[in-house]
Length: 421
RNA sequence: GUGGCUAUAGCUCAGUUGGAAGAGCGCCUGACUGUGGAUCAGGGUGCCGAGGGUUCAAAUCCCUCUAGCCACCCCA
Image (cartoon, rainbow, N blue to C red; front, side):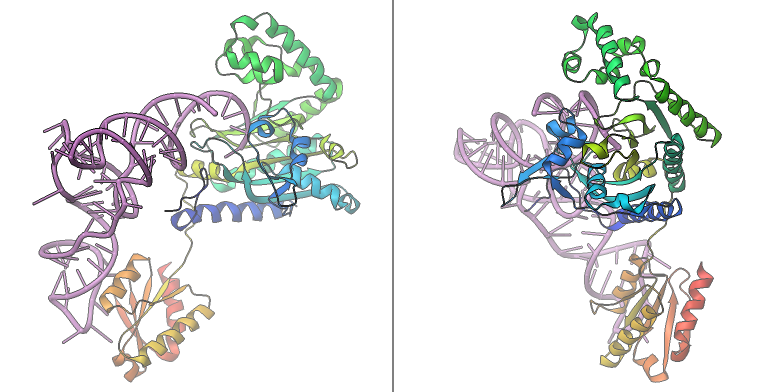
């Protein structure tokens, strides 16, 4: 028996309504906020991610799906959406279209990790990027958009964390301060933290073991230069004025290297270990890093699987996908069958989701099936009806049956559907 | 990459000290040759995750692998 690849999922049946719910809301809201869709390939040259996400990040160090193609090129299945969008922006000379530019994407991402609740090797993200604006009003609009999306989906039990990482100079000074502070505790740190001390000092801050040291550690916000500080203060003012609830989290650092100034993460309160449902920030240096002009930019991504987990844990009722509102049943000979095919087509051309019996079962079995798939109405065509030029319509909720003349069937069914809603 | 738990029917699961593969639900058929849901009767639908070992005998014990769940690292 073949098995799907570890950490991947087959999506079908009752699951799909959640995907439709999120994808439709996300597309709709993106359009309202002025984002255009962008679709990039799901794989890229490996170097793109190494360069943008950062050589020393966990994503590059251990989570990339990298392989060599037949031409000997190193290919990587995209672990995140921003780098490809930035690549497209630069490669296609999109800057020429003027600024700002806003794009959204929806699609699969890949990270080679051990699966657990809320974490898979193939997962899906909705993301949004803004190119061109250095202003905190762009940061504010982006966070407002993320919050709006979550609210539109029906979620309430989440918290928006924000922080500022300053510019590059600010971070260098801050890293020194952190290093100095942790140097005095070095011996008593956990093993992981000893590694972090050498490789990625910012990560020391969100260690779950050495929390006591992190609490008294220097705060990045005390090391921000004038410009970064003003930017951060203005962002907070804009968010407050827009009525967005947020929490300042001076220990929020994020796992990708390209962030500068604003970073944010949205956490759901009831998801278990993997509680981040969205995250993002400003990446003013990235476009230049990838070979473009110096264009400030920012963006965020939300994990669709985690949004679905959140919807379920909050018991949000999402729209059902309507299919098989009507089921066409026939019995007897060829004439009834021909009539059934014609009628099903007629109803479908009127936009009514209609199922047709394909198994040639007994009427009893057909009705049972219709009931099982949630049909609201059944059309019954037999010899009797053919002779009298009528069809029988059975209301599956009440069990009532009515007869319609053939010429009136479509309108009759439409009326009944309207009444039932 | 590390650790814990787990893998028997489509689903949820039982299966004793190693001794003839089971239940509930679902599904199919019929009672009702033209009426679903309720009831009754019948039907087991299975490579007991895969491979190897121990044994007269393995779903059961041992080893390896694969996958799932949960957690760590880290993230969506």
